[in-house]
Length: 141
Image 1 (cartoon, rainbow, N blue to C red):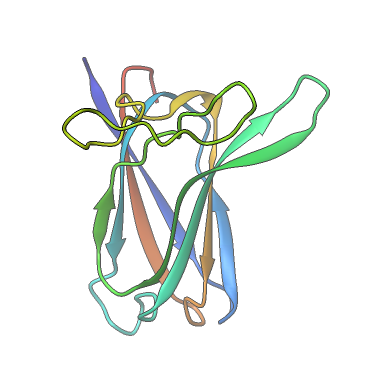
Image 2: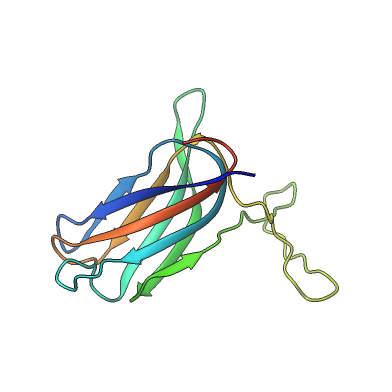
């Protein structure tokens, strides 16, 4: 299966935070890599907080978001491989584990069908930037 990457650069206009959307994407989200800028005067400050959400839009034009990755106090580059939660018919999260004690999750990752990711960055510092590299399998750019 083919893999491709998409880079999203987030620039903060003020110390409080910033928000940026990825382009519309198709395929399975394999990973998100946060790449801390190599120049300290340009990099997000230490202890930056991230919220990455998947945008959904109904036929009626209602927009809502599903959490993909949320983490506080990030100080260095890192890679995450987010997986959708499994829920029962009532919408409650299931805590299913295998006999070996591993949590059962959707191993294929989030399916993106012309959707965008929203990158919310809190406490990045003023005029700072960071990069997110998204790896997708299947689909197209």
